[in-house]
Image (cartoon, rainbow, N blue to C red; front, side, top):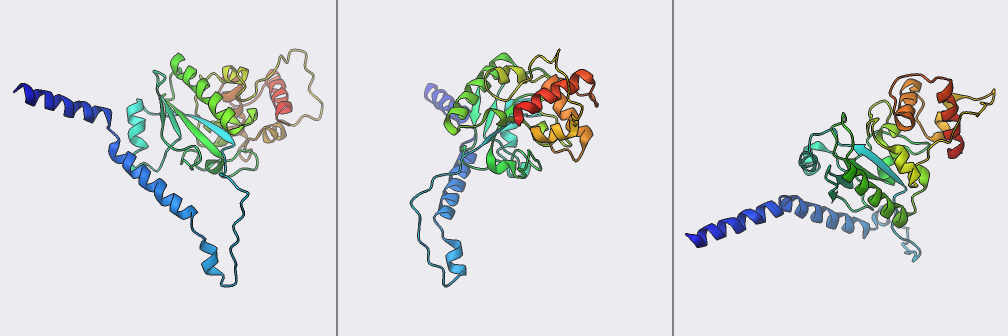
Length: 264
């Protein structure tokens, strides 16, 4: 009886430690399949007169943006489940739980399905140029201290590893202002900017706006898609003012101008 109980406990512990063993196996197979694609020369067969000569000067494409999300779900476990079933059709490179635990879900060089239909400046395929980070947050709550500490640690590593520009740490709501509002307005963007991830504005008390200042053009220079100007303004205010009301007042025009100057 004692032997049976011990065996039962060993089996249970194994199940707890490897709840995603089956999807990890699928991940490895899909990576293997992609590696096989890289080895192919598909156009050579399509053009009989084409002679393939492989250059020796190349490397992997690297990510140039980091997109920060909130999960809009109620637990890390729920999000991990969502990202490991095929019917969800969504994923991210990293998920950070409220207790600060970081789950690395996809090789940084591979393309996650996290940005969706989005745009930043002239880039209309953000998924192909970015790393997606999901923070466990239902969209209506504060982000935890351990969570933000882990995020800052991760951002430091990513910026160093890939040389990601300071301006290119942005939110999902920034690149998809008509569809998304994450991370929610409680996200500490100023703390990130103070650490070198994104830009923040300076004291604008004595700032005089030029008479030709165009707020929509300023939003466009920063990177926003301004086809829906109301959505773009709300996205800007959510990021830089922790405010989600439409429209800009005189003080906020100054903030917009100051931020724009940093992105020029």
